Image (tube, one colour):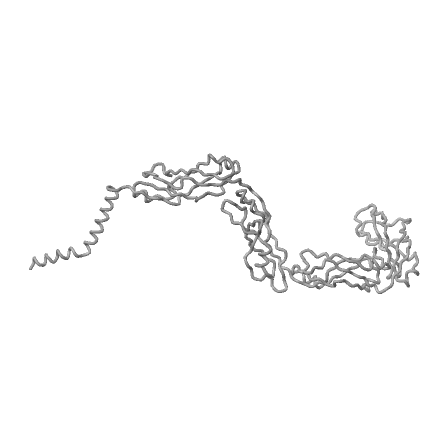
Length: 434
């Protein structure tokens, strides 16, 4: 009976998991022995070993040459034989790859030999082979060129909108130059440099956006270059002004007018009477309320007895920051004084000095007179005015120091606020200290 139990134990020993584990460990030991003793060496191919071609600090770099392209690829494959445990640890960084550039003397295409060695001082493996053994390279002159960065107006019109009642103004680029360095053949393809922006929600106020620099060919196509083309900047700040749209009346103004026209402003017509503008939101409403003065009539030069001086065409000069939304560039103005005017030639011998700064004295010499002065006024008044009632009003507000001051006078008529004079010449007024 004991013999039967021992036999059962022997059968169980050969059928449990111990036999499986023992077999695995034994197999590993056998493989290890074969690897180190029977077949210790192995052959392996290491791919993607980079092929560096550097011209900096070489005679090529000093001549301004740079690498433009390398083909069929910038990597090689290296076949090595050595200790199995060693070659399995090799990486692309385990090798030194060099290219003989001695035959390169000028810009152009070359087939250059490649050589490979170990990067370690000593190595227990042999470099059996590598491929390819030559590379086709193109060298070109390295040039540097500066371009002006323009906003891409078509792109901005598509991606940037204003809210209702507003519009996008003239977009600008801050620090709008970029220096580009690279092979001359590549740089020559660049005809324009523009800044483009990402799509934006409708804007109601001026905004600064990030602009991406894009290089364009002569035909307007976007250019894509390798990393051998370098830009001094890749992004810029794009300023997008948002302008408010307003209707603005076109007006004229008057200076040096007689009292009558101060109390009863002269009527006139302007054609067109208004213009649509777009301008800064903080001033647009005020301009719409006050109107835009297109011309100032100076009564010291205005003879209303002549029909030609009662009308004229004037260029519309817009305030800074405004732009016209119409095609209108000028306005026709006709003065309508409501009175028929006549003129006569008189001599003025009387002068009155006004607005003289403190500490100064000024008087017109007694023998001074203005001849050939045109006096203008209503028909009913002009012939009844005596010369002793006509005087020249001399405004000395601008006199700052003693000396001779050349002035032109405003011709007035004492007791008559509808008449004035036009004097063609000026005269000197001596100014002294008080």
